[in-house]
Amino acid sequence: MKTATNFFMREITSEDWEAVHSYASISDVCRFQAWGPNSERETKLYIEQVLSDTSVEDPTRYVWGLADIEEGHLIGAAEMNILDKENEIGRISYVIHPGYWGRGIATQAAEQMISYGFQNLTLHRIEAVCDPRNAAAIRVLEKNGMEKEGRMRGHLKLDQGWRDSYLYSILVTDALYR
Picture 1 (cartoon, rainbow, N blue to C red):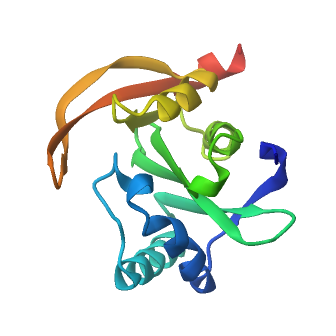
Picture 2 (picture 1 turned 30 degrees about the horizontal axis):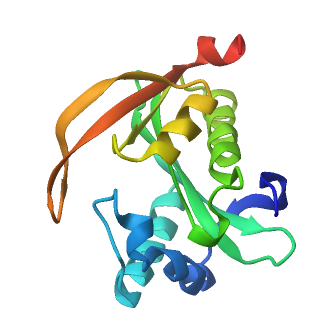
């Protein structure tokens, strides 16, 4: 079985839409999300929006493709959004193709985003939210030293109704002493 060290983070390109669609169109991948499963058009629009958002001079959105080192194709994506520049707050998220679940890729991608946020973007606080039913996401966040702050009730509207979210965070001072 491959380990997390067999991927790298890179910019997403317009040619990546088919690889993104290969996981964004799977209902299991999006069952805890407000998006998906994507149609081809929705995936292409997502790629266009990512390219637009990340090409501005002072971006508030950073998106990386997670690429398999051996095969070179995209196996997921990782994202950092700046929620509040003045208070130096960012939020991370990630999505992995189910063929690569359980290999530590999400954990390592989250770790890299947290490091990038603190070292390159000089953030003070990095957050993540997840569905309380998503045990795998909870493990990823906790493995990265993020602390659960609480449950946000009715936080996200899904097709099947409103979803609660757990809010996790890590501060730069927490990361320095881990």
